[in-house]
Amino acid sequence: MSAAIHEKAERLGRKRVRTWTVLAILLLTQEAVYFTSDRPDLMLRAGDWMKTAAWMILSLVLLAALWTGGTWFASRAMRALIDDEGTRANRADALSLGFGVAILTALAIYAVSLFEPVRANLVVHLVVSMGLLSAVLRFGLLEQRAYRGG
Amino acid sequence: MPIAVAETLRNAIRAAREARGWTQADLAERVGVSRKTVNTVENGVFVPSTVIALKMARAFDVAVEDLFSLED
Image 1: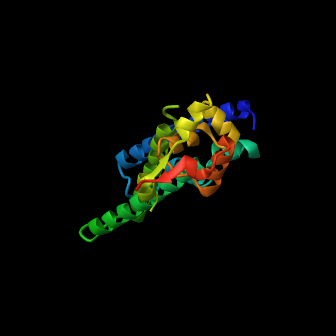
Image 2 (image 1 turned 90 degrees about the vertical axis):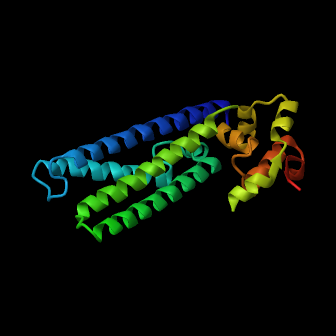
Image 3 (image 1 turned 30 degrees about the vertical axis):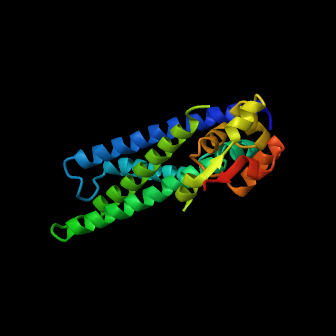
């Protein structure tokens, strides 16, 4: 493989970290709006469907990106470089942490629900967002560390 | 456990690379991985697979034991 494709892979890899960070901030913003709305625990009102759809789509995109590496439109050679062995190890590490955080969040909510009823939609928001945000943050930190130096 | 292995694995990649006047990018190009992966292997952050270790040894034209060794 030529030096040009390696340089492009490095640029795209760094861009991926920035893009995923922006998406994670967007997800965090959506959740902040959701949890600070006047009645987040009640059923959706007509105007909330768009926000809910956006949150679900963003969550699915982040999950798919973490699972596959997110280099869907790159050539095969480029994908092999951007999502090479080191990057796959970082993704596996991030997914593992995200899974653990999601389970711990679910257990914590279960403990709270023993004393106070918690609605299912709130639980889903918390579990999904905590799992995804921790995984994306972990991946970003590992990738930044990997790019440093040299 | 990968972390335990990483703590006991030493490598001589930086020395071999610098002896040849190669940058991390040069080595990455020869091995077919990203510069980032070369950087993490070189710094002991990431323990590569046997395939990558063998490819690195081939790039330097040395035995894999000359690049990687276990701490006593």
